[in-house]
Length: 402
Image 1 (cartoon, rainbow, N blue to C red):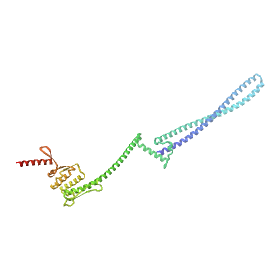
Image 2 (image 1 turned 90 degrees about the horizontal axis):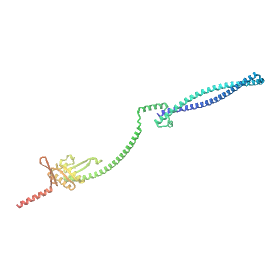
Image 3 (image 1 turned 120 degrees about the horizontal axis):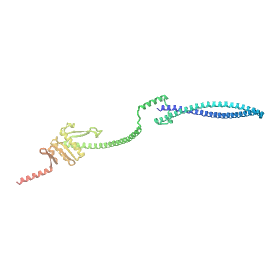
Image 4 (image 1 turned 60 degrees about the vertical axis):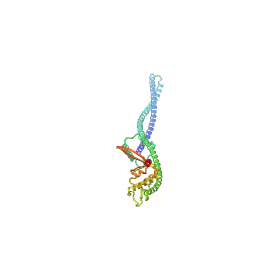
């Protein structure tokens, strides 16, 4: 579109230049014609004055002749009058001849003046037409300048520097027409689009800064997580190795022998890896934990639990029916292990096994003496033993006394 407008502008500029030249030439011609007309008018004025003077002199001579004729008729100074009359007639003839030439010259000057006036009127009319054409060209040029400023924000001088590279003027006009059609198809122009664009640009810059901050914070967090993972992995492996050692020792105490092994299912990622428990009870071959009996599985779980408590003691530990699958010997070993760990942890055991109850310090039971009403009963075994011993001792003394 710039190319088409530039070609149109250049054509108008050339036409304007040509018209300015034509107007200048016409102004020079009009000026010359005015000078000629002025000279002709001056000549005509001189001729008119000369003719008027000649007519006056001729009228004066005619009056002298009439006066001489009257004097001749009266007979006074006839000879002198004849001489004077002859002289006046001669002078009158000369003046009449001069008057005739002046009249002819006046007629010629008047004709020339009318001719020059007619030519001047024609040139003035052409000059007026040229002025109108020049004004139209200047208006068109001004319109092009305004269009350049409105559409492309450039001046005529800047547009003159643009050249049509690789296309002819017709091609540029066709392309400009196509671009105009595409611009019309775009519909109404949003006059607030510039402000909206600036607002969105500011919003984009703000969000970009926020994104950069978030990405930096993300990188920092990932770095912290990586450092924590490394520290956690080191701590986990240390604890895992300690638990494996304690698990093997406690397993051998509970089972009176055997071997154990704790393995990571994914050694490359210990924090997300599972743990494989491999045990070999005394007198049996190594086998999967699921193939062991219920009591063996329970004892293996207890060994692992006590290994964890030995490495990382807990303030209290709750066990629910953990001894349900244990026989009497294993129950005693379990109770001894609980008693051993009770100096560092408090155990809360939910059980129905009497052998486990015998090893506890306090018993809490629920009874329902009345239908629908539960009642909590707590017994401290040490105190109960003392009371029982006292009662048994008193009875014996009573029996001895009797």
